[in-house]
Every structure is written in structure tokens, then in C-alpha cells.
Image 1 (cartoon, one colour):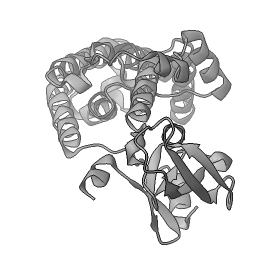
Image 2 (cartoon, rainbow, N blue to C red):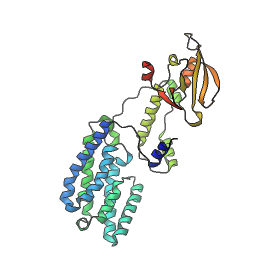
Image 3 (cartoon, helix red, strand yellow):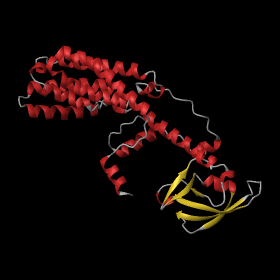
Image 4 (cartoon, one colour):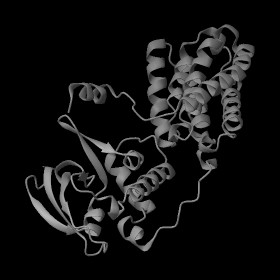
Length: 321
């Protein structure tokens, strides 16, 4: 692993591919959400509105940049803000020391959100603002929970639903996301890719023992897309050519690269034979003989040498070469 990759992983730099269109839509959504709630905050809390909008600004990032995330759904947004506001107001009213009140408000908000299944990070900022925003907020008492917090949360939720609705791939809430019909699996597909039961996902997540910001539906969708891509990569036996390199697409110790040394030119793919040698990975320096169909079933991607590394050859590249 290169030093750059190590630093990227250590710093947690997000490398998920996202289009410029998606980034622009997220930015415009954040603008619409904040403009919509800014007037309400200014009307009810005046000079302290900046702190209120700060927590809603954090919500805007989740609602418009990560609309399908578990932390972005309606119950976490409403519950996270309202419950945290109640806790913050209570701590501010019963604990005279601001620093202790602020720390306790945020800590309690995190714990209660966990138990009520409404973890929403901006809720911590709402709890903090209830304690630290000054007399204009303290004077509101529990009215602060209703106006502006609940009202602001309802407004930004409404904007998120309306703004995201035209975009089929990012409708909000996540339950409204348009699910494209998947092509029917063949019997071979069902043998290779079994379905994942709800209880299996619950068990797997319990083993991680940490909050994972992805819904069960999105996990299943990722699985379906990944296995669908895998099916697309299955090789046409006719693409197995002498001198070319192929990999099984596995990870770690199972990864292997084979080069075709010779291929029988017969037309019967069931009997047409290929001779290969293993040039990298598991079984290095080994060799073997398979039918063209058997080798195509093993192969998942074609590779080319790139110095000391290997690069994948896409189907499009292969067709134009």
C-alpha cells in the first residue's frame, strides 16, 4: 500500500465517486433549506438566530448531501432536534454553571437519541445552543422547543421532500427512492448470489457494534448493484485470447493472474482448450489446461501490465482494441 493511500485511509478522505450534477443539486438544496428557515429564526429569536441556523445548517448538509443516510431521515431530524432542545432547555434552567450545563446537555442528548433511535448530529448543536445562546433564548424557556426548533425542523423537512422529489435517484425520505426493476436472475445467478435475509443483516450490524449511517435498503441495493455488475463482467469465452492476461477478481491471498499461452482454434467452445500460466498471485509460476468455457467462468476481468502494477481493461476498451 502506497504512503498516499495510507494517509488517505487514516484521514478518512471520502473517495466515493459522485457526479458534478449531484454536487450542484446538493448545494442548491442546502441554499433553499437555509433561506426557508432563516426568516423564521430571525423572527423568533432575533440576534441569536445565527446559533439556531448553525444547527439547521448542519441538518441541511445531511438532508441535501446525504438524503438517503440513516441520520438524515425524518424521525432522526425531528426527534434529534426536538429532544435535544428539551434537554438543553432543562439543563440551562436547573444547572447554574454554563460549562457543566452545556456539556451535560450534549452528552445527555447523544445518549437519549441513541435509545430513541433518532441519532442526528446537529441535535447536539441544538442542545448546546439552548444553553449557550444567551438571555434571548433562555427567556423563551420551553417555547424554544416549539419556535423556532420544531418549526425550523418541519420547514427544512418540507423543503427536502419537495426539492429532492424531481430527482428519481435521490427522493426524500429514502423510502420514496425510485427502485428500478432488476432483471430476473437466472438459475445460475440464484445459485451464485443468494438473497440476504433481514435477520442476517441485523446480526452483521450487531457484530460491528457501532452506528452505521446506511439503511438496510441501501445495503441491499448496493449488494444487488455489485452482484449485477459482477454478472455483467462474466466473460464471453470468445474473448479469451492468446497472450492476454486475466484475473479472478478475488481479494487478498486468493487473487490470481493468468496469461493465455495457447488456445485451440476449434469452434466447439465446450471442447476448445486453453493453456495458461499463472504470472501473479495465488499459484504463481503454475500452469494448467482448461476448456475455453471453464476459463471464462473463472475469469472476472482482463488486465494489462502497468509497470509493476496491473490495470483493468474495460469491455469498451477491449471492443475498440
